[in-house]
Image 1 (spheres, helix red, strand yellow):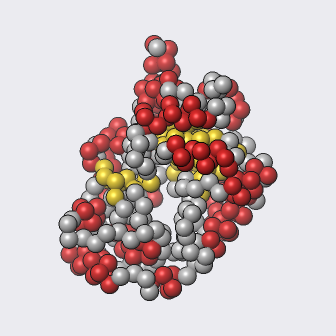
Image 2 (cartoon, rainbow, N blue to C red; image 1 turned 180 degrees about the vertical axis):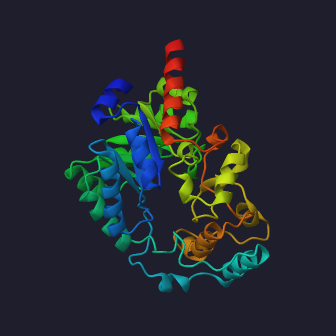
Length: 360
């Protein structure tokens, strides 16, 4: 039997059924302190950074609950060895990137980009998992992949395990692995996303999940979207795009990244493999346009594509390159066109949701 959202909130110690994902420590803490459930995207952080940054969130949130998100793809190398992977990058792809650097006058980065500071590998993920297992987070969300051994370890450490899924077969694997919570993320979502729309996906996953609660994700940008998610059987929602243009997150973006979000509407986002080698929804820019050109090479598989593009992506952000600047963002980005406090975003979303649900 599907839980009521009130019961779900009481179980998880939150005031509103809004889960907010962010790569910013400050934003995660602000989401939790506003009564929601902040989730820290830690997949690009070393294990010692995860330990330190989760401790910072705890310091800012007191005893309120928060969580962490990791990405564990099935096919990754064993070791964090960039030099070994560099040998597998085709010259055609090197030439393409060098041509883009020259065309758009991208300066050298001061260091590796976030996708090249380490190679996503079994070595790195093993250390990340251990750091999270030893932390005091309430929920561990798995953004890609639901390895049964990782789920078992987290549950053994007293943590709720959540799985982001984009189609029914993903849900089957997550449920078989023992996931406690499913996040049904539709095609509308920013970042790594699938091919099934939110309205087609959420009711199917709710039916499959039985007593396992489901959050709706992908294109959730207003209280009306939250009410619609409840009508489809979800007990809450998972948002990321909503918190990009917040006072807490803005310092972590370049000026042109922020402007690309302010200017964007639903048709100004595009799904491309040019970011990581996996489908990724982001604001349209010369970066995605160049990779979509008929003469462009096909993006490499993940994580080899990270090796190819990681440093230049870092340089684009570091040097605030306008034509190539972009940000991961969902199709709901058009509802967010100014920078404001995270607490105001949550308050507006939930006030509208309550009004709409009362009317229904």
